[in-house]
Image (cartoon, rainbow, N blue to C red; front, side, top):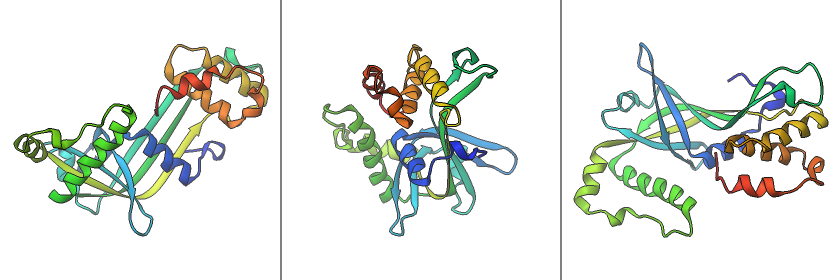
Length: 227
């Protein structure tokens, strides 16, 4: 990933972003062309601290046959993104741009065992059911054993051993305080949730610039959940 230094988050921030987002696009190479699928995942860590991304695909998905434990795959985790008009800057001679947050995880991928798959499905559903609290969480035990077994046979669990973590959080970090405030304010006025989320992220980078402004933006955007 090409990332100018001013947009590069540290490893911990990148991993935290990926875990909070929990949804990405996995891409592998089949020898002739890229093969990709978008899917939910969660992160855990090996005893030595190595991150691992756990996910699953349909058994007939071409990715299932490419998980050989030695070939490197890429997982792209994208968050909010929004267009920025040059007219929004306080300074002249600006150009159109796009703000966004994204993290790339790279590593080898292996298949899960049957025992691992059951634990994986419980952990994955628990992660996202927790987003719906205070709703009582859905549990696999609510399904009949035959139906659950049939569903498990239709998928293949996969684990990426994350060897490289790259992030790019482009949030106008290189702009002046005046332009930073101008863009954050303009984005907060857009109807798209993604623009408002990025405005909140920008406010968090330089909170002292926004102390006299209303705080309703932060309350609104945090209610949108992780993106």
